[in-house]
Length: 117
Length: 112
Image (cartoon, rainbow over all chains, first blue to last red; front, side):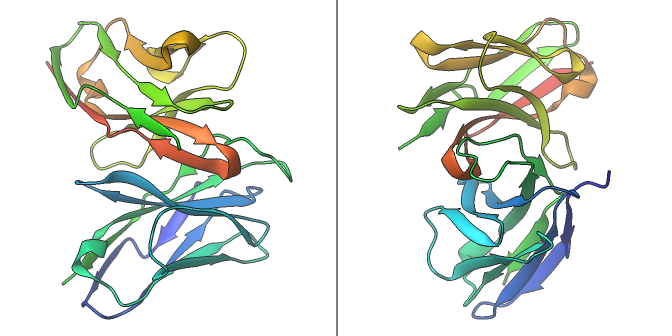
């Protein structure tokens, strides 16, 4: 099975711009989660989507948003970029039954490294 | 609120030495616990997981971890490390909605 894929792998943007990152989960996985990884804050949960619905959201401003499509692919968008948004953005997919309440093992993609100048 | 603490930020050891990385969590409900590893230049990989049952879980590459509920701990161990175990190790707590809360990570350097 192919793993989680993320595009693009690298991105350079300017403050004030917006960016869209894409994630394709492992085939059959219906849950997609997004994380931000920075040297200072470590790995932080952004949000999780299951069956096109956001189930959980981390403590990030509204500039961070996401969506999931019917084929389980997901995108996240960051508007009005700030220097502090420079980070590695990781996508993870999980095979979880409908209505599953507990966290399941998640498989991570290689990430998109975003640099904001 | 849930949190995860990894007390060792950096560990340096020689090949064949034993490794133990500490992980403590704070959460009032049922927990799922994970250890992930990030090798240099590679993406996060799952080493092992604990959902329920036997508190001693075995993972890939000779790693194991012990869940001690009374101590809110999930320490990772490997009896004999190799140079290829040089990586950053993350403990994570899973709660409802597939949200993982990660510890700060421990960078492990194994000297040949």
